[in-house]
Amino acid sequence: MNTTTLRSLPRRWCLGRLYRPSHKSALRPISLIVPIQGVASPISSRSVVTAVSRRPLLVVPPSSNTIATIPTIQYRNFQSEGEYHRVADDTLETIQDVVEETLEDGGIEAEVSLASGVLTIALPDNHGTYVLNKQTPNQQIWWSSPISGPRRYEYKDDTWVFTRDDEITLHKSLQEELQQLLNVELDWEV
Amino acid sequence: MVMLPLLTRSAVRAATSTTLVRSVTPAVATVGAKRSYHENIVEHYENPRNVGSLDKNADDVGTGLVGAPACGDVMKLQIRVDDDGNIIESKFKTFGCGSAIASSSVATEWIKGQSVEEVVKIQNADIAAHLKLPPVKLHCSMLAEDAIKAAVQDWKEKQQHKKQQTEATAEAAV
Image (cartoon, rainbow over all chains, first blue to last red; front, side):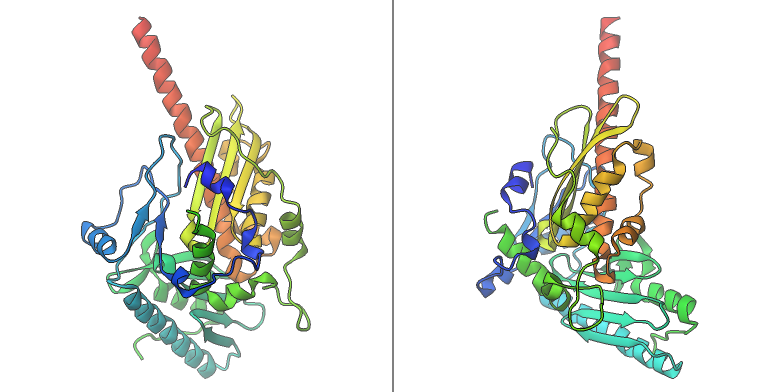
């Protein structure tokens, strides 16, 4: 992505209605990873091979000028997009079920809804709203929390981990934050 | 690359369809059926500050480019830094939603006149709070924070490089 390309795109097109995809093939995933420099790539050679063989993985070559980007881990741990959808949907559904049940048992009135890959948990008493959504292009789950703010989680070793600290898992984060906010204990084993 | 807007938009749509499709007029809940952005976002969206580019090859310019087109947002933020380490000019170009544009617009305003050491302390939460970003849009403020840090990092690397070259020249002269 060089400056010329950026300039050639219309600014503010996101809010325009004119750019709706006209046919389904536009939904085919094209991955474009902005070069990460000065950071050892955490992508294992196996997952790279898998990703390349399964889909066109378009990686922008580093330009002659250094463009520094923030280190963000880019895993690609799914064999296919279908598998990503299956695991991510399953994750969000489980979270929805457990949160709904736990809050109901605790007599806490919250609005929990899951639609089109977006899980919204609106807590009562100005505790704020959680939004967890699937981000298919980079096979992540994005998280927005009233406590920890925005985060991206990526699938690694059968669990979703925070892209900037893989010690932090999605399930543990939610468990700890809801404990802190509402004094409820989420039990993932049920 | 010609197809990019199409692909990008559809990728976003596929990923978070409910939320983002509605994001033409979304997010902050108000009374009644009409929902709209907070006025701070709209103001920056309608009148974005410091849109443009600086010469990315210049020694005193740092460039931060973050995001990925496939994910829906690309943000380029540039700073021009004087000899004392203060940011004297800042420009941005962003392709993304109104919140992403407003976030980068605010970022360029805030960092002008500040030192590079100060601006890396700006948190996404500061930007989100100022713009009253709704939960689903907090990611935009994160992108702006990342862009500032990336620009400063780029500038620092250039200074380091310049210093090394000067030293090498000095050594060669001796």
